[in-house]
Image (cartoon, rainbow, N blue to C red):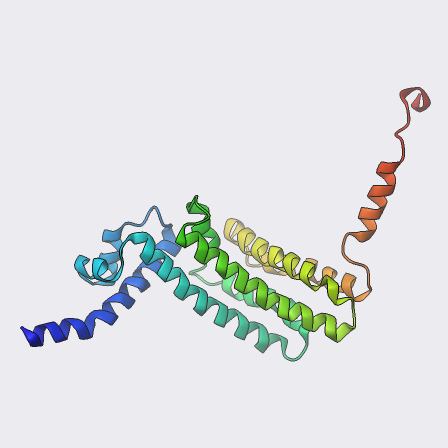
Length: 231
């Protein structure tokens, strides 16, 4: 009996990892609600008892799987960005979209796992939504470090770094969404073209949209012509 117990204990970590692997693969491909515990257990090759030994619920398993994916995805994205961009912050920022394009062209691309998961969970306080939000915060933080470096390189107004990093995150997530819906990996290159314009605007000291915003304010401040004048 003691030997049997020790064997089960030794194999427990392996069972947990297999459950996480199965949950991540099935949920990323088909969604949270469409994936049942039985399917996860079956694909993992573990006993249903193992599931309840390691996780109190399906949601707990999903959150744990997403946390693990967050770590792996961020490591991959950061390494790819640094490798392609080298010592230039501008190149690192732009090469982010080349990294994404490579991902978009892969057979197992199903969009952003964190946006997908957040779209299925209503409560902002749900652990799954929390993991998704933390992932985006980590991504934004990495982008912000590159934006800070870019402004240091160009001697531009560093006070615009926070705004640029938020805009960059929108471009990254927008490219992911468009690539998922359209099936076109080149959505990354379209976003990259917009990103290049943003960087050029920062380098020239003209924040994106400032000119149009000023023109819009001036236009709106003028009284519209009356009907009598127009006739």
